[in-house]
Length: 116
Length: 113
Image (cartoon, rainbow over all chains, first blue to last red; front, top):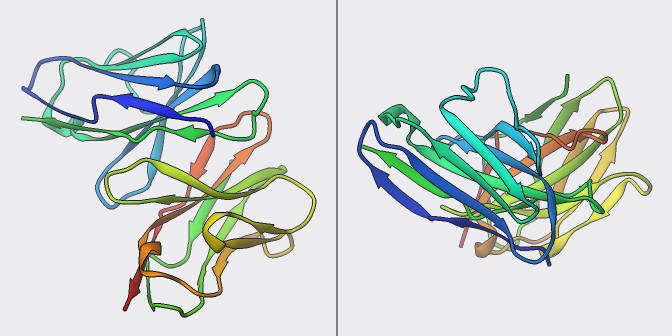
């Protein structure tokens, strides 16, 4: 089955620093990757959609300068949380979709970000 | 725009009992429907999906769901639950041409011995 990994699984950082989260599709080429945010006991909220080789499309209310997304290859997308603040603490989950299976997204295990 | 409503935030049930987790959606266009399961501090695992065809969809771990277009529902069922089914369950909808998933609020299934 399709496998998506995320790194790191957990990260703790100081307020004002930047954190990069990687999302990789291990056994398929992901033409599209999605980034979600999940607060405790809540549902997943789509932050942005990234297509390989093009700029990410952000959902309404998501600051594109704060959450930088890069999808430079067919197997890797990165989310950088810039100048992180405690309110950015959350569980970030990515998903990936291949060109030949546009109806299915495969989810990564998530990254727990804690900003002190 | 699409939206998804999961009618129960928590469903407690005893082991080996049947369970139904309810999901209703709204959309003015054709959609795909999904159920995902999330174990603590993990990502989402696809249980099943409805794209087209037969309205009764069978998934992994003994789960099944039925698409009811007239009632705009996609309820998830399992005839006999196990302790290991304790998790958070999310219903989701997407438009076929965008792939963006809209999630419901989630239902916590608590299976008691």
